[in-house]
Image: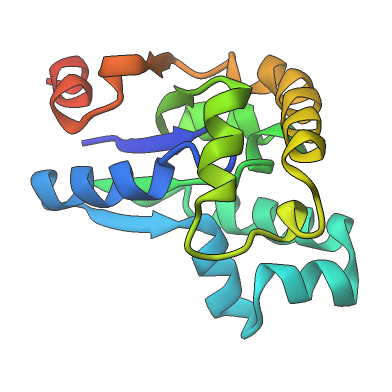
Length: 166
């Protein structure tokens, strides 16, 4: 079976849903950020700080290319991955893409309530974070919308994805 790829803004639930789906289907789960961290032996934040965003985006592209021959995987991408280097086209070739769509208010709440501090949320007030999320989501929407399926609201669950796949 073809791979299932979950895309969307940070904190939208890609990894949580991806792990559940992988468990249910007995597929391998791949989180692109975690794979890059493992390959580079440092965190995404450290990669950004030491080498810059362009270097990180090249690592994402390299990882995607390496996933082209994989089968039966649930792949959870970093929030920005679909928006660079023609990655969205490659994602649609590698598997069935699902955009997990949430509004800026919900995303802001999730980022603020996350167990781990996300680098871009650091040192921002709630209002500043909301404005940031709203603006960045607006820019990324054109890429996310190229996904084969968009999941919003009650559709963001394993059962609904299974109904589309099978």
